[in-house]
Length: 208
Image (tube, rainbow, N blue to C red; front, side, top):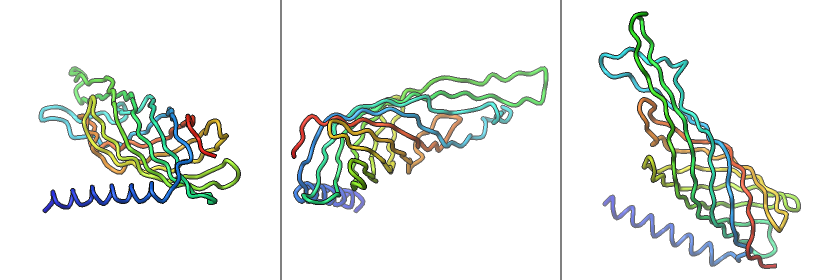
């Protein structure tokens, strides 16, 4: 029953996508470049048996930066300010972490750890937007994302994007909020990835 529901949801999604593309008109398509920095909302797990508590003040998991590239299709209904964006993207994000232990014995030192995680991901995004004034536009959407290295998990971020279309390129800033907490890395568990991102959309083909 669960498999049937998943298949039904998948086919409904394809039907919705087909109806959307059919009802719209391709306005432009081209390259999109991303750069930004995430924030990580995390929880610290309890230490293993025999170890003291973690020093929360000196333990952290943070994002250094994210970079990415993809391809975008922009569709719109003729004679309206509404448009619809579809995009396929790949991103790289670097995350640094470190943790320490508290010790009640001045003669005993517990070694913690630190390091870097490199997250690679692929995503498909869909959004609906509207031109507000000349090239200024606002969009909201969802971006199902699969992280495949060096951690494997799925996230479903939603985003809002404010952009200005110069016709030869569009510059935007957006905020993405991760809806899942699947990024686990001991001792940091149930981590949520969110953050700001800038993008530049460069149309390679455009219809008048």
